[in-house]
Image 1 (cartoon, protein in one colour):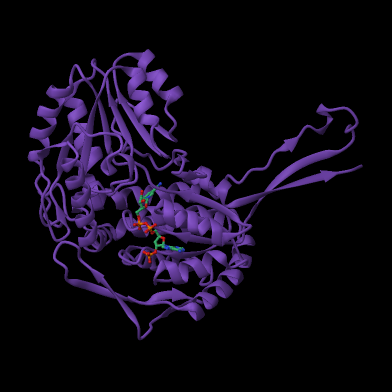
Image 2: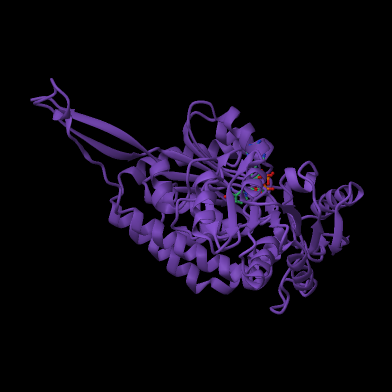
Length: 470
Ligand code: NAP
């Protein structure tokens, strides 16, 4: 595919191969963007921002809604594209497109809700005659940098609110998975987005991504990806607004009164969907000693039943990781844990990008598989004595994106919600749960700012204060 900058679909001699992680075949190529392309994209986006800030809200609504309808018409092609470039099973890819359609629809609705408020200035002495109100205005040019693991929905979470709020947007998709973002760009243009309002440029993040985020004409950066790259972007961005949706090693606490069958189902869907490559995957399972061995027996049996293979096959439940070297890294962390005393109950082998779903028991907090972000198909189970113990273990992390507890005890559940330092807290569900309209984001090293169209339009607008002096 070509990329889209300055109102044109552009090709370059230098290409990047897009690889199907399941069989290593080249499914497409994209141009490798360079510094001049970034300059052209930004100049066009500056022009686009002027067009967008003058476009009435109902028109922005219509464009985004039409894009959502076109996505619905192209659902099979979009889902297959996700599976081929990313490796997630086709049922999960279809669910991603369905969610992306909702993300665009609620972004359309938010275009109509950019409210300000009147400020009661007479609530303090002296300010009796003035009349004050706030106005929400677009930031201007928004840079949207996205990761590989949800190549459509996470791009929609940036592009939808950016356009809804009256900005122009420059998308830099992950190099492994650029096709979904390019197809979304085509759909938005077909839906009536002005030609300069969107740019989608492909190429290495360290080169073109850095050039985009450091440019002073870009007024807002919205980034989803790893903590290290997020930190680098914050340094390069300088004085501009940033939203950071970063990684995690999410804990799942199991109390003695939990329904073990439900917890096992939740561990499997939260730990192994998209081969564990979800920012809120269940990674650290903290299980009360009284149910520890029953839970491990049931979990091991369930994980052994996960059918792996070609992600286009509808009966397959888990496909490959995105790259071979990620499977190698996951396997090294598993080996390191086993060599330090963890028990491997099932899995533990890999070939190419296919890593078997793996359960490790008796994991210690200082093992890499527990204290760092794994982002792969394994769960690390550790026993705990009581709720105090479990909360302390859950909080023993620099991350804080999602956490979960299974219990029927409302007191335990409320203690968990109050005391676990995490942006998203699940009671009787695995940590991998997200509704696209909710305010989603992390604490600590998991980032700052919120996504979810209602909250993202606030992040992508500035508040002006107006005071009338009689
Ligand atoms: P990544 O390596 O951090 O890359 C993310 C994006 O940043 C890619 O488009 C990448 O481009 C670009 N990039 C790399 N270096 C850059 C730089 N110096 N300046 C600007 N852009 C740069 O992450 P990933 O491997 O794609 O995704 C996995 C990570 O994302 C995990 O840590 C996961 O937890 C996190 N994530 C978080 C959330 C959330 O909502 N909190 C959701 C999904 C994923 P290239 O591809 O060209 O390198």
